[in-house]
Image (cartoon, rainbow over all chains, first blue to last red; front, side):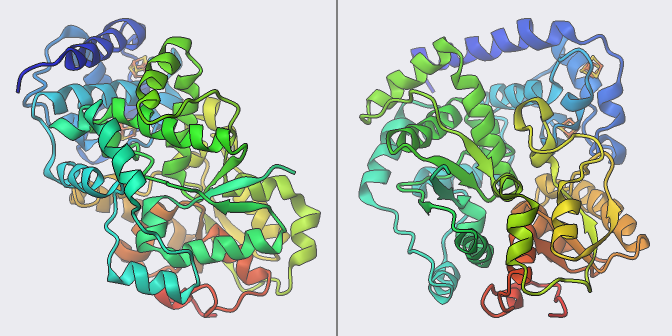
Amino acid sequence: MKKSSYDTALERELHDSLSHINLRKCHQCGHCTGVCPSARYGGIRPREIMERASKGTMDLRLEQDIWKCLMCNSCSERCQVGADPAHVITLLRNAAAIRGNRPPHFEEEMKLFVKTGMSFPRTGLTKKLRSEFSLPELEVDEKVMEELKILLSLSRLGRF
Amino acid sequence: MPSYFLYAGCLISSRLPFLEASSRFVLDRMGIDYLSFPRATCCVEPIGLRSLGYDAWLMFVGRMLSIASTERRDVISLCNGCFLSFKEAIHHLERKDVRERINRNLAQIGLEYRGGVEVKHIAEVLKDQGESAINALVKRPLKELRLACHPGCHLVRPSKLLRVESYFSPMLLGKFAEWIGAQVVYNELWPRCCGGGLAGIEDRISEAILRENTELFKASGANCILTPCPFCFLQFDLRQKQGIPVLFLPEMIALAFGASAEQIGLRYHRTKLDF
Ligand code: SF4
Ligand code: SF4
């Protein structure tokens, strides 16, 4: 896909956030990995992610460990210097997504959002339960869909 | 007292509407002024979707915040994930350059975010009501409950932004339990992740984290898990092997306020409670 000026702006923002705000603060103490539930079972290790990201030795097109994070924010809560590894991981995931590295599960969710504005499908059961409990109906109205389309055209999500 | 928009998010409104029913029951009983959030979309949830569309996240939350600010209403969130999404977006939108950029996008759909909207988790709304207000509405103290309290990550972290609960040894769920006559047998010191964020993605890790939680709950003698998060609710109710029933915070309060099990759809729980 051809790069628009927007893509460049997003890449620059990701790059700036990664190189200036967070990575330089990290002094590799490893406290984040110590509280990471995923690391306990062989998943992501946030200290190691911070190290590879700051050295620039991460191939974002192939990187898999960043997708093993639960976004529980334990690492960032524990980090004493405000390096905010969970935020770094979010930005790395975005940068990876731009390069075509996207887990199928999230890709499906994204397609649903683009189509309906929602991340969970509204099914027959949704309708049945909502009426059983006298909850207001959830119609995807045309005005919302129109606004959705416009905002998506200004963002990456609609154009992957 | 502030007036609110009730934001139920995708998971509750689509898949777990009975959790919305108990939440509305509680808000109604407490006489809180709220309307359904108009023209709502997903909050661009912070685990998956935001990982692909960081820019879209700020636009879509900004869009909803600007709707709320135009209508001069604060927002009640029923979900830890939506709560985090809104709170972090508000924080980022405080930066002038970020707000200007997002407002340039929002101008395309005739909206502008000017700030001034507060977003509260329903646990926070209940907390603001306080002990005596809640106590006065209890019709049926739930003495039979021996609870394991599970706040969920995004009620407590990042603590600098969320400010509902202490990030270490939180007590809020325990207080609610006490106010409605239930007993707490287990409190998490460092609030634990339920593993739900990797369900369907890295199932082995997700299940191991889940098991670690529920084994501790089981050993404590708990007969029920209490959580204010619909994602944790689903993870425990659907995938747990130890068979401990789970209550969503508003469900527990609704039952104590006299709601019947039918009225709030307890039969739609996979792991049945004895009510
Ligand atoms: S991110 Fe923070 S906690 Fe983790 S290694 Fe770096 S300084 Fe230590
Ligand atoms: S946010 Fe991700 S990296 Fe950080 S502790 Fe949680 S699972 Fe580990």
